[in-house]
Image 1 (cartoon, rainbow, N blue to C red):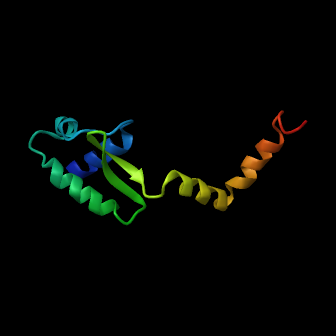
Image 2 (cartoon, helix red, strand yellow):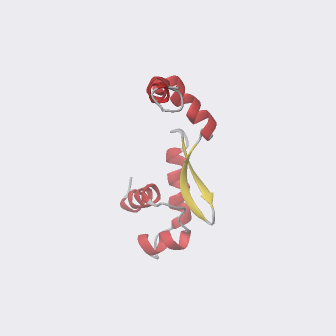
Image 3 (cartoon, rainbow, N blue to C red):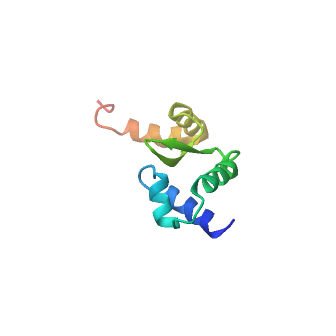
Amino acid sequence: MNGELRLLEALLFAAPEPLSEAELALRLGEDADIPALLRELAEMYAERGINLVGLAGGWTFRTILPPRCAASAMYRAGCRARRSRRWRSSPITSR
């Protein structure tokens, strides 16, 4: 992976909101081919469970699973036990 692609990846993961191509160009340099870098990054992540998506006029990473499925996967992975202990000890349920 080249330096521009690594920087683009880091910027998108660290950004609290989608970054526009103009914002990315400011950080990567005006000579960077932002559309080509975005395509390459999207291809790299296509099979990893994360999508590079255009959102709100910018670019960001999102998981492929919708939130409901992600929550369901966490439940099946063992998060149920931790959640249920907290639930049983809450003041509302211990009456």
